[in-house]
Length: 407
Ligand code: PLP
Image (cartoon, rainbow, N blue to C red; front, side, top):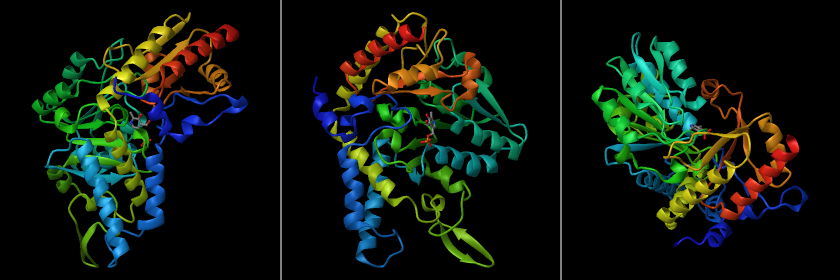
């Protein structure tokens, strides 16, 4: 396989950090946030050292340089996510802001009493709460499609819930708890046939290089830079330009206006209409650098490596007595949520941490899903292409040992 894991790991300085007791770091919390390659760290440092100024408004060379880097980063994001010509990339602070932008600017102005917003049981709070707020403002109703026992979206229930009342379908492309990936093309076809718009929360699918926008046919796509190896505080909403241009501003301020007077204000088209004030310029530059890094990889090989890691982890975990994995559908990103009979998830995390292993426990910002599963929380190991087979083996051995002590 054309995938040199040692060379790749050398690109990520933090992976060589030692944890308490001199243990090597095993970073299995990638679904929460991914680590950064040196090239992203350098890009941020270089930008601040050589090209930094505010964008768009400065009549001097440095501002031109800064503006051009910011707009280049936008072009990289559009290309990476396979945005067709008629789509536009708006920089946001992350998937949460992107989803709020859609729910407020589109939702508050297009929904009314009797309309329905179709979500699923496996959504992250970022794709629930903005819609609940939109429902409160408009009188529309939030409806949820069920998941099956294996964690996949129940397409029969989805079709049952999709109706002429549905004005927007907003779904996680991949679940941050179950790892399960929806059949976006099928969802999109059904959604379009029902006359509704499709918003995809791609926070968890983007790090695993899943389908581009043209394959999914989504009208709105929300992503976070920090989950795909870029800086925090940056992200994007990639959406159909025609829809964005029909939406009112989400926030007011500088740079988003055509003209302002005491009689009223006119707005610029997207993307500027939705980027009021000084944006996270450096975050966008780092986001672009993260995309450059990903594009330098053999993505097919990286994907195959992740699949191998997931299969090995899932297999080995099954031999631990009393362990249950949530999300067993075949189409999954490498996210494994689990519980162990009689042991609290936090106790597991503490034991693993003592061995240098970083995992996450809790409700993973998906409390309604926890209710569906009848759980308070789970432990979650989430992998990236820079993780290794040796780390997976060390994790399962340490987990097995922790379970034997905690029982
Ligand atoms: N959607 C999903 C599925 C997520 O997993 C997350 C974060 O974990 C978000 C949205 C929100 O992302 P952010 O906190 O980067 O805005």
